[in-house]
Length: 123
Image (cartoon, rainbow, N blue to C red):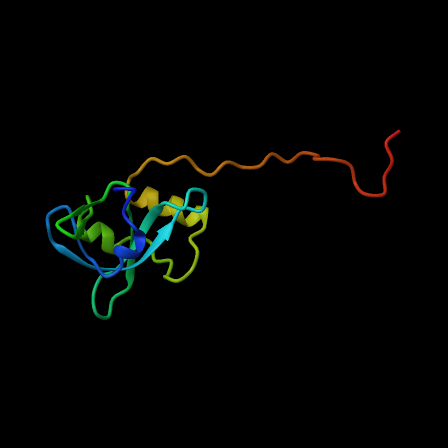
């Protein structure tokens, strides 16, 4: 995905699968927490359907539409986390696995003592 694209300009664009079949219209764009770069698009898959999340990284803009390198059926079967809410790292990991994209799990913070407790004395 081109990183110089303003995510606000993606909303309302049509999205197509790898075969050129229309998936739907982009409803929302989700940004990476650390970098602020566009990471996910929520695509409304039909008039009475839900939004399906697709990763923007392997996708590209072609003639003003989002071309997603996955089959429509795979996109429609993506985990449903609802829109308008923050995606947790675990939800993102589930989505990456669904699309067969290799992503390392988020690092865990080691459980260790970061200092002494207030009111205690070293000695």
